[in-house]
Image 1: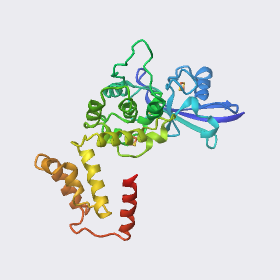
Image 2 (image 1 turned 60 degrees about the horizontal axis):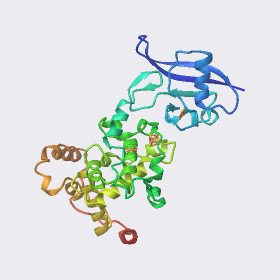
Image 3 (image 1 turned 90 degrees about the vertical axis):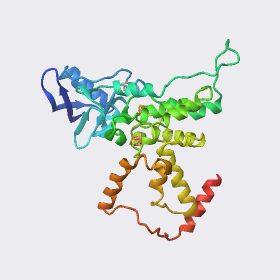
Image 4 (image 1 turned 30 degrees about the horizontal axis):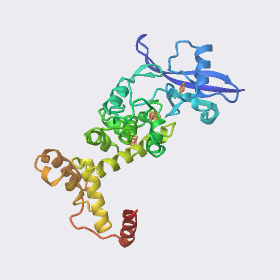
Length: 317
Ligand code: SF4
Ligand code: SF4
Ligand code: FES
């Protein structure tokens, strides 16, 4: 048995208590999960403590909390692995509004999920009297995304979501990949266009937090990279994200370096420059005033030939 002080971030609007932290001291044996610790507190000390849970087996996705500041599943996290100097801190997941204590409002999460149409638009099977099988090879492409349990751990630490509440977020994008790559789906073209719209696949900044926090193999950042590959290969280039990627590719391919004079212009699109001047000018001026504008002279870099060789080799793969 060991003594642990569990600090819980609480929130109780109904009883006008607002946000506050509360310490609970508990005695726990080895082998308890963080969710077991919460249950012990609720059942033995304070039945008003509110949180979601159901399966206790890392399947239902209900028990995502911030444990020592990072989102994790309570039922999949051994208390011993996260207790430091007899202390443990538990709070609600981030990038969400809190309803009560550790319960957050997941309505925006479900709403964004629906935006990527997470259901099959089935190509008609030849024989409708039999199951509509996915091949092993086809399933392999969607296997990782299919393990998502919709726990919302990934959205908690997403940096893009923090700055733009409209961004659909990593869970919805992982789900989108699952259907874009489903060989039985007939809406591939429409899906690749829709996922390239603003607030979707190109708005991720690759911080990697979603994959780091994801408790399954869904690993959203890898799924986002797969979608980007699909949309570019499918020729959906009429957006800033795809243009930026292609400009980047062209620049490294031709000179072995990033030509930062051209990339911002090509990312906006030469034909769009005039229409977007109001948006681009303030950014350009800000960069200039902070000494961050790219130099007008393109400098060569040491061993740039090596970069070209790597590029050539990768491009042949
Ligand atoms: S990698 Fe992209 S989607 Fe994932 S947390 Fe970072 S910004 Fe969000
Ligand atoms: S992608 Fe991972 S972290 Fe995000 S909801 Fe699905 S299982 Fe949870
Ligand atoms: S209680 Fe179901 S995932 Fe933790």
